[in-house]
Image (cartoon, rainbow, N blue to C red; front, side, top):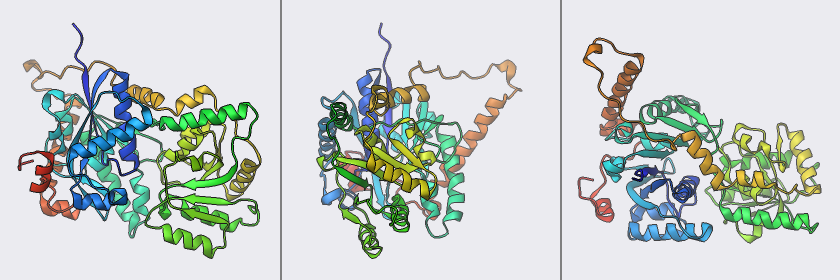
Length: 464
């Protein structure tokens, strides 16, 4: 008799058409886990009411129902990977925080999955999903809970007013909630905060179309044809924290040594006008364009990708540039550790090195990428790494039975730790159920339960 498939539920904090990492990467993870065929997979994403949709989604895109948005998500994915493997998409109620520029869950989102399917939960951004969680404890609902840390929250918070004080508090809150709600945490790089029971492994890949572009460029290089006709560029959300401050400073300070460099920037964001004005004021040879898909044909012929950002955890655009066969210039930083094995990735530790490596890259051709390294960038390889470090390939252990009566006076260290963890989780659940306390710590008011409109849109009863 065939063994019943385990069910993997992936919860994340964003959904397409918002082109952010926590919308795109969990979608690919769900598809490639489903493609592997060893698990039944469900992706759970936030549903926003129309008032929030216009704040988050590009071009004021709106959906009247979760089914309509699901159709959009599946079409987008199919255009990139071809025939879709079978997996489910479900929605939980969310609200957009304009202060945090992120979507926060509303109510107890563990309820989106029935108890008989609660085998393995993957929490993409576990701290984000559990800061204000009130309801069933994740570890009690699911037999195994894996967190995947995407965001270097401490680095972003430090850049705000009173940032170091806020970062100090946030550091302990993040450690607390991930400890009580996750059995294991995967950190994409050492640029993230260290939390209990965590391992470092890049479990992300690149959209297959970037690998196909790279194969074409590889063929051109091997045939001694000119594969790249343009110079250097950078693409990223146009906010100062995404490396634009460092980039303009480097280009301005070393303008004379970099006289042959013509730089083109692509991005959209709240600081776009300021970035453009600063480049003009500093009289830099830079052109600034609105953001667009990195796979667009306009990017195929650039030879050098310059990315000075150090706030990313693992920069997706760096991986995409390497997959397309480009030379990458980036900072020698923990967020870029995964890319050190790639011969076309050149890392600088000083401004002098930045200048030398940039001018060298403009004068030489990229080294054709080997099949082995190309595979390392793929979602197939990322899924293999994820399965290995999450340890989900093995049969789930049977739940522990109560201790024998002969040992009723003995409490083992593991039992003591478990009891303390249960008490800590109970305390968090109590605090997160008090509206005033939630608001003090930054929750959106009245998000303990979804409102009547969201329940109606999701087809839930009014109790959520």
